[in-house]
Image (cartoon, rainbow, N blue to C red):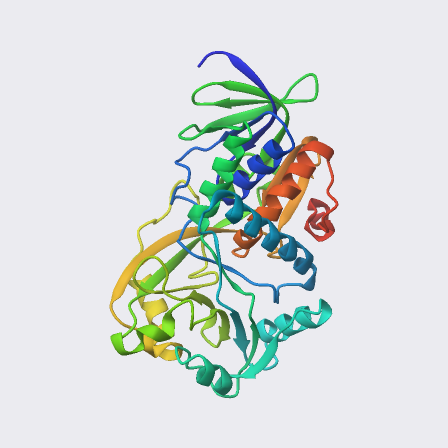
Length: 381
């Protein structure tokens, strides 16, 4: 492809955030090109793994709650439009010692935003949901609307809906560089061609910092690992979506998260900042190893003993961490026509539907009516 094609907006990365951005841009009637270096969807980055937690109770910061409220509505709308199995409500548990940030922060966000919730002791959690075996003195916030989003179906849904609105999506095409044009637009060069647009969205996950020098020390990839363990046959019913809420748990061993059995065999869990391995997304140990497995099995055995059966699956993915672990949603200081979504720090996918809307706002208008002030690049100055 030697010709130079012109678009309103080019989106780099067609994963969770990029596919949503392409959808929202196309929904506004814009001429959109999405570029993805791998498949749509794929397992090389941060937007895979069969299930991703969604929760209204948000211990990271109460300011996220208005965004998650909008995200829920957009996920429901996408599921209705596409007929895809995108969002499941199982309830959610955020638990730990009474003075711990996971419990206390979750409770605070519910109180500040009038989110219906229950405060339970560890003993009450164990009685109501027998798959759990928490310390009896722990405290937990239970919120009935929590659950999980299916990331692969979400990406497919956004992509198909974007294409139905006229978006052009290219997989297996790697962006090599981009530059500002004389008329204030952007020129993007890939391994297959050159494209020009009025604006650009960088939503390339762990690779985003390689496309924007501003993000060099602000969007840092980290290796993650996940495990699926088969529950004991006598306890299998305790780990189904109907009986087992998704969870976040702060314990002396670290902060962990997990899911009921869904779509594939096994109870799934992971640890935030797994083994604290900063990586180059193009050169790291993708294959899970026995140390990854042992770390996650130990926690399962201790707090979810009925689920600590044979290993069904192991997988790696990547977090892309910002210094304060809050999102980066902004335009580049030197290039206001370039919108960036990065630094989602292991808790971003649930917001992908609304982040796509925010990035479309930034690419077209340079600002958004959504409450994103705390996610600006200027906080790092």
